Amino acid sequence: MSSPLATEFERVSLPLEHAFTIARGTQETAENVVVRIEDGEHTGVGAAAPSGHYGETPATVEAVLPDLLAEVEAVGDPLAFDAVDARLDRVVNDNPAAKAAVRIALHDLAAKRLDVPLYRLLGLDPARTVTSSFTIGLDDTPTMREKTREAVEAGYPVLKTKLGTDRDAEIVRAVREEAPDARIRVDANEAWSPREAVEMCEVLADHDVEFCEQPVPAEHPEGLRYVYERAPLPIAADESCVTLEDVPRIADACDIANLKLMKCGGPRQAVEMVHAARAHGLDVMLGCMVETNAAIAAACHLAPLLDYADLDGSLLLAEDPYDGVPLPAGEVDLSDVDRPGTGARPTGR
Ligand code: MG
Image (cartoon, rainbow, N blue to C red):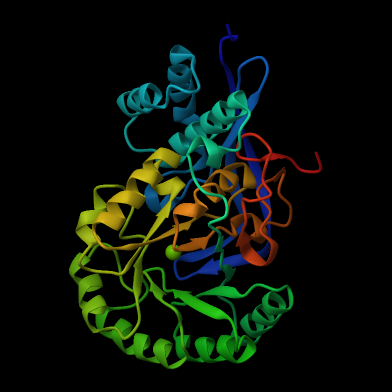
């Protein structure tokens, strides 16, 4: 008979290596909330990386966690995913990052109790690897050139450059010049009008860009479809694809669904979205926020389900209090991950 579950949470302020700029704004630190769930023998860890774009802040996460964690304690069984999921959604609406933190910690604890890595609990094949992109944030063009050179020298073969400036064509040309052999993706974070996006997609295709993420605002779904029907390269939906209900809505308006645990609310919710996306003929990408390995480690265990990964959030931090699944040259390789749970552990331990 196991001990009752004990829970706690803690807000952590994570300075970034470089200020991170996308079309919507700049951040210099990431505010995450780490959740721990203990059963007397093992500790499961997870984290929330709330995004104001989706209506959450560290304060909202801290406000709802006591209610969410009370439900976990009431169920008392870390393997009772269904029961916990239902109770979390009954007690609090929305708040996906807060729920993701709880569910990641629960998955970590459940896998530790079974003494298996999380991918084993999910029944996934660790030999199926995918290479994460490394993100180049917005900056002046010479600095983006320099960041690209550093990423290439660090061995990252897949780059994702942010766009959404008045010199996007210049940026793409510079990044391609510095990384002639890299797979390059771009993310406009809703910055363009549909017509601008179609024009830019021509430029992107000329520079052999692999796909274009979220070219237009999510609030106008017909805009995404307009671009998709005219663009000469694949289109990915991120801000347009938040939860399971969005998958059928974007199915005829893009090629790739970009999922995130912090948008959909947890690992099982992401798996549901993977299968829904595939059923609708979409390829699947899993991304992250700027966030600690305490959260990203769980996402890495879903890599065998993916076509594309963008799981570099911890790599953008100056330091991370947690180690997770290693990403040598961006490769999400689970074949050497034999530590039980997600593999997240305090740095240096
Ligand atoms: Mg994106």
